[in-house]
Image 1: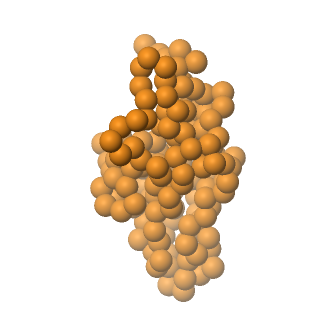
Image 2: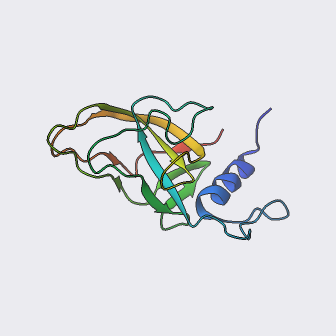
Image 3: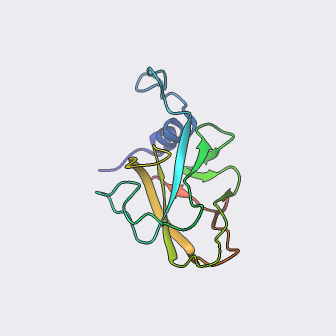
Length: 143
């Protein structure tokens, strides 16, 4: 089974931009999310994981809120990318570890639902002065 190309793009637009899919889904719930939260991980959170699964823990780390609209995300050709670079808190003296994955989820903290996850390429070695970044070249593709 697979999704049709138009629907793949529609689904990404619904999730990342809050755009309705005519006659199927809309974003008019009681309190729809206005932001999605990007988290960093030291291993793949996996399909059964949540946003705390293997989540990094360095000084000043926090998930980054990205607007759930076309100012936060660009959807095109069955792929979605951040509309601007997503920068996380800068590492400080004593911070160590390797960031291998990122996730897009539903909560600012706690066990948020992982909507999508992927590999950080290249991996990021945390150290004093390092600012982890997910660039606008990063894509999530439905296929």
